[in-house]
Every structure is written in C-alpha cells, then in structure tokens.
Image (tube, rainbow, N blue to C red; front, side, top):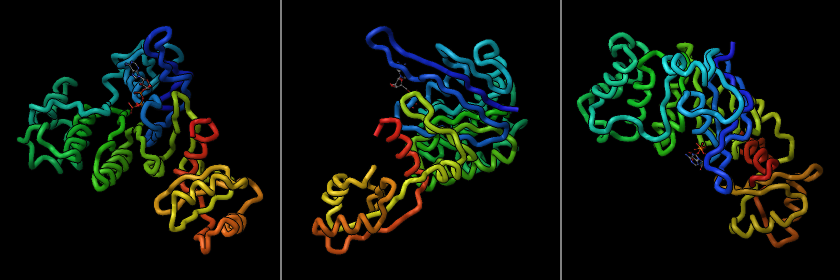
Length: 309
Ligand SMILES: Nc1ncnc2c1ncn2[C@@H]1O[C@H](COP(=O)(O)OP(=O)(O)OP(=O)(O)O)[C@@H](O)[C@H]1O
C-alpha cells in the first residue's frame, strides 16, 4: 500500500495579474517505509506541496492521500498520523528543550515517557542540555529538537521540509544517519532539500522545478538514465576555459563542478575531440578526462532539458 499519493496537485497564490503558480499538477506515490526525497531549488514548490500533504493548505486542484486518508476530507485524522518539521525553525524559542518536547507531546495527548523509545537515539544527544532555551541552541541541536518534537506522537509518516538547509556539513551527515535509523523503524519519510548530493541518500527521489516534477526514480535509476558522453576539464584559467568550451560545437552543456568544469558532449564527441579543440585554441596541456555522471550532473541535465538552465 502507498503511504502517500499525490494526483495532479495544483496550487496558485494571488489573483489575476499577480498570480503565482506554485504547483502545476504534481503526481507521485510513496511506498510505505520509504525514504523519499523531494529535490529542488528555492521556489520550486516544495513547501507548498508539504503544506498540502500535511493538511495545512488546500490544493486548488487534484487530490492527495496520506495513509489512505484524503487530505481535504480527512484532515483531522491525518494530523494525528503525520509528523511535520517545517523549513523555518518552528519551536518555542523561550521554552527549554524539555518544555518544547513536553508541549508537543501534550498537544497530541501523549507523554514523552510513552514514546521515549522512538526518539531516544536523537533526543539523548541533546538531553544533557534539557534546561537550555531553544533560542540558545546551535543549528544542529535545534534540528535534533525539532525532529524529536515531530516524532513524539509516533507518526506513521514524517514530512521534513529542508531539514538540512543552513546546517553544517557534520550535522547534515549525522541527520541523514538519524533518518536511516528512523526508516528501520518503519516510518515513511518524505524529506525536501535543495542539495542535490543528498539525493543519493534516499530510496527514491522526485526532482521538482518550477512547480513540476521532472523525474521520479531511484538514485541509481537517475544516474543510469544519463546517456551523453561526459568529460571533466581543468586548466589554469578556468573562466576563459568555460567560455571557450561553450563555443565548441560538440558541447551540449558546460558548467563549473568543484575544481573542474563538467562538459556534456553531443553524441559522437569525446575527451579526444575536446582535447583537440582546446589545443587548437592555444591550450598546451589541458587536463581532460572521461567521467561517469553523478547525480548532480543528471539533475543539471534534466533541468536543462526542461529549459531552466
Ligand atoms: N503565500 C504565498 N503567496 C504568494 N506566493 C507564494 C506564497 N507561498 C509561496 N509562494 C510562491 O510559490 C512558489 C513556490 O514556493 P514554495 O515555498 O512552495 O517553494 P519551495 O520549493 O519550498 O521554496 P523555498 O525553499 O524558497 O520556500 C514560489 O514562487 C513562491 O514565491
């Protein structure tokens, strides 16, 4: 059975001339127990989608269900079953860690003691500071508290809206480890992120752009669908190199990627043809190598096809 089904969901804000279309007909399904990523840049529609699925916002069109319940008709029942960690910090800054957790337990008619097992691994890391006010916590600690609060009523589906935005690299890594261990407990998790590299940590991902889904696939499936030749190129003047590469007829797309430029080639072109082109343009020993696409290359290619890059 699917935990979450979105069927042609639409959402607009504003009226007439000022209308913004946030969701243009989004459809996907999430399996029970799946860790499902919604990957997309700012403004893609991730928050609108999560707010509809958690019954905080009404769709203008389409239907959606969570745990078999309709997001419009059965909103009360859904609220008991979902955990939601919004993008912006949602806790009470003047309450302590312990008070925040107690508060969220109370509004769901439960106690921290009753569901302690579920949050133990996460909460125990901040419990030594339980008398500290939420407003005085580091980003990583706030994130752990927010996740504990979203879990305290034992939800069957957890929605996490950009939980790792603005969080340091170590805390990001720890957070994903926490999600993998929650998944083992059978919770379905939908997590949105603007970081393309986090896609590889999900079971499946949906790439969302401008209110539309460009692809739903496993991380391996996304990578395997990349078919064009791809090379990495480096030289001393990277800016000039990028300009020159973009003028080469064999190049479909070229973009900076770490200390290299990644260059997607048209069929029939290769690292050798790129080297020849560069040597004709006075590059003496350009570093050009054939590489395998990673998930970021795949997403950049999908966005280019949809006309966004
Ligand atoms: N209340 C609102 N009124 C008007 N426009 C809105 C409103 N909420 C969102 N939008 C617009 O709808 C589009 C989708 O926004 P949404 O917040 O759903 O995207 P997002 O992917 O979560 O991005 P972000 O991370 O920037 O919040 C954006 O163009 C945004 O400006």
